[in-house]
Image (cartoon, rainbow, N blue to C red; front, side):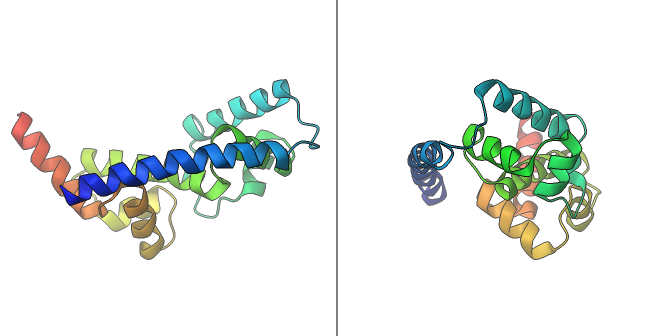
Length: 155
């Protein structure tokens, strides 16, 4: 129960932070010259790079690499991520990595957590566990166990 309350409170504060971030981003990028049409094209290319090309699996992926991949200026790419996804590049990157890790944890029970960590693009166990716990609220091992218990109850 305590964990559920913590997640609700964190979600509320994240929504408040996103509103504040959105307002500060508007001021921050007033003079950037990026049109809405350009931003939407960049956003579409970013989504394709992550959803279809799965570039997040590259363990040394950085903002410059994404910009080169979609053939756009790194500052505009950063602006689009900050504005349209309400997070910075590394939070965006980790969100995709964690989403893929969750899928692998449940679909490949024999695959080790360490192998999954490398598969989704993390270099260190510490950064993987920290990012996973920040996004999901529990460790990868606890997530796998909970998902397995749920599957057993449903079956």
